[in-house]
Length: 278
Image (cartoon, rainbow, N blue to C red; front, side, top):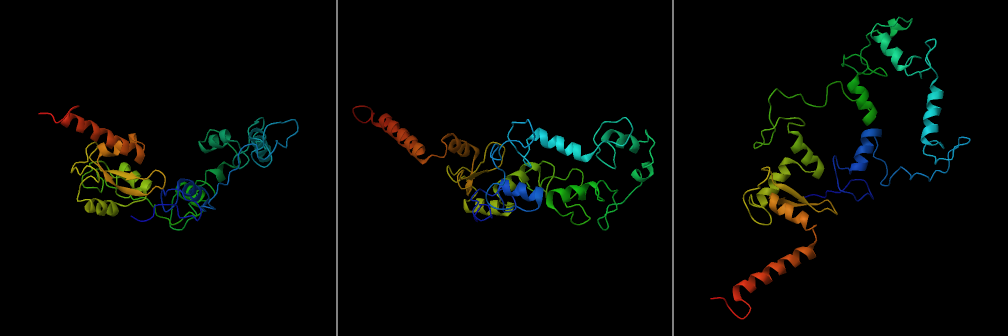
């Protein structure tokens, strides 16, 4: 099996998806850039005290604590332009409540015609109504997560009603990439593909790598055994052997002690305390 570690230099964590560990994969989804190997977030209290007068809480963002930072954002946004409303302006000088009232036709406002105007998504050939910043809901979320709205077509395939998982032995419905949610989660977690698992099972002659059983037991799927320190996939096991390794904590010394214990007591049963049993 190929190396299953994160592709960022100096990281050393097991790979989760797209060649990245969990931290760098989440960072790439949120900002579009996985960044360096180390963590970006500093521990609370390392920024010093809050810069607001009279506040002794630790700073977390922009030299302010969480409460003071939120208050500063609210003050900078201004208030709702509707007379008598003390809410914070979220869109077009209106608070969220009045903006939705205009959209539903409950409240008349000079900006109603502009707010209710059907604006298409700015992505070429999309055609969906704009949701925020000139983009539809799909492209706006894609821009927020990856930094690029991408192409007009949806990236996730739409499956026919009743279409089952691409694994021939799985009766569950297809959800991601032609596979059910369970199998796709397994592939992403261990960074392997269906072809790699089939090749590994073929090298094991369709048997458990430990007990040589031809039945996986349990859910009917072979358990993917991996090293919990390096993340390296070691082989495919039946559910019994996989559970046993987990209960032993993957500790070779404990497993060797259990082997000696069983062998010693089996020899005592065969020979007895004073010689062979007849």
